[in-house]
Length: 204
Image 1 (cartoon, rainbow, N blue to C red):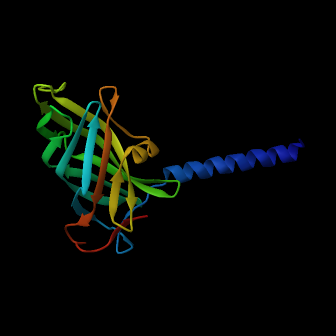
Image 2 (image 1 turned 30 degrees about the vertical axis):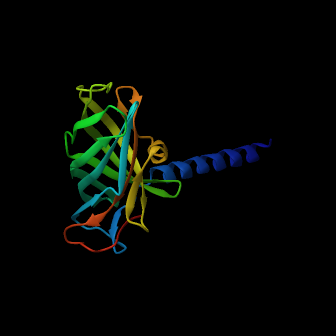
Image 3 (image 1 turned 30 degrees about the horizontal axis):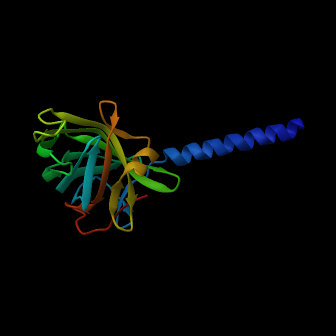
């Protein structure tokens, strides 16, 4: 290969690599009615469906709520989850009940990111303690701690964030009990609660 063609090929590969890196690391901002958020806002919602599977047990909560304060810094969306009450949680495994479940060490920090044309909400510092009951339950009476981070895909058209195995893997995040992978599935709507109430929320 001629030196000039070799240099051109190397430049092209470098440009492609830089373009991919930029795409994977870009951080979108919070917007209301299409305008970038200035200052801060509080958003909240309740999961339309949510389940958490620890090896051997699957827990579902009828009421999985959240309260999150959001803002933009340097054009990048960030925030923190300040409240995460969990109610009416049951276990789908025969012989197991949910005695208690609680989010610990709040607030949890959050930020927005984008990769391959999708926008994601990243939740860091996840810390949930579950205590199961039931004489036949392998985890009965032992406090179980789910920790790590989770990434959910943001859909502007429905104003939701969806968390599942695919979105968590795509964002390089993960939830764990010790060395065991925890599967989390949830669809979370978003709604402004303060100055931007009833305004359309989006990221981009």
